[in-house]
Image 1 (cartoon, rainbow over the protein chains, first blue to last red):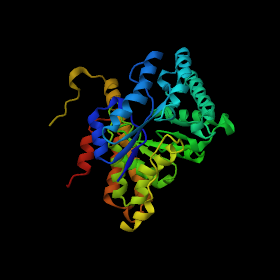
Image 2: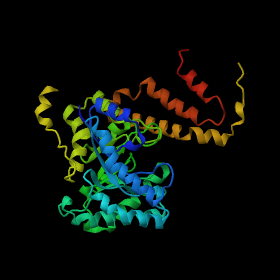
Image 3: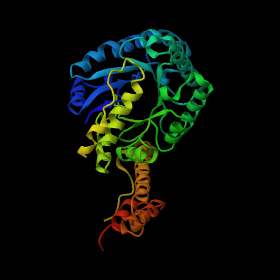
Image 4: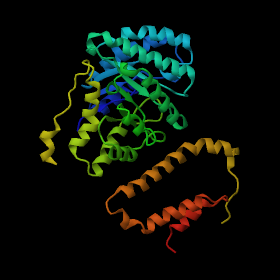
Length: 287
Length: 81
């Protein structure tokens, strides 16, 4: 079984984790820019973006894993509009790096007016990246974080409203809205966006509930991730979700679709992403 | 054996709630999802009267009590008499 981990913060993980991921079938990871646990200076962001675009690909390559990333200022640091302005001004140059997939993970944390403003600025930046040859005349891919716990439903609605305000400049097929749960997944999928489910020990989804959502809402435009970072998290929760699905009788073609081919399809809209979906039809007779 | 009424260590009720709320929330959602899963499964009607489902329903009633001893009451509910 091959996996693409669509959301993992490898800067917070050990090199041994790369080895473990490789041993467990992970062929590529996608690392969104996120909060480091403290608020950084604009210069700190530049170092972080270099870590994502230069250092991590080398670390991953030691184990045959392709490393891709997303660039942004995380919503937790969006309250300082001056800092946001400085950081956003530098993002276009990093979007041109060969392992960058797009703008993310942008979004909301506490649903504040400043967070909303910086979210819209990031979306505009993704639209302006349309003119790069790599995007084939389309806006840059966008990866969106939705808030935690009691803020999630309201925040998800705010994000969908703001995206709608951009009209035809935004193609839902080029946007993944992450951390959906039972009360937000249909809002996201019904609007035509890709959805991501995150498997966490306490908050977000569990393997069993994630498989429920695959069964209820279908595997189309749906990805599963462990969003492993510096907090209580486990990179193998993606694999545990695959095992839960297998236990319930889901067959290899569907497992490959959710855990490999869906991320490959979404990310593959950016030519930087090299891994192609696996033709599962050839293996159905082995079930 | 008499149950001791107070927590050692001076933890306040608010601190206990802070510490365990998210875990309790996660378990409640997990339980709700499991019950939904049973409803979606083939032959769901056949287990409507299953004693294990009745145990869950009776346990939820115990959770609504306002006096302590809920965990013990649920354990006794599930014990062979």
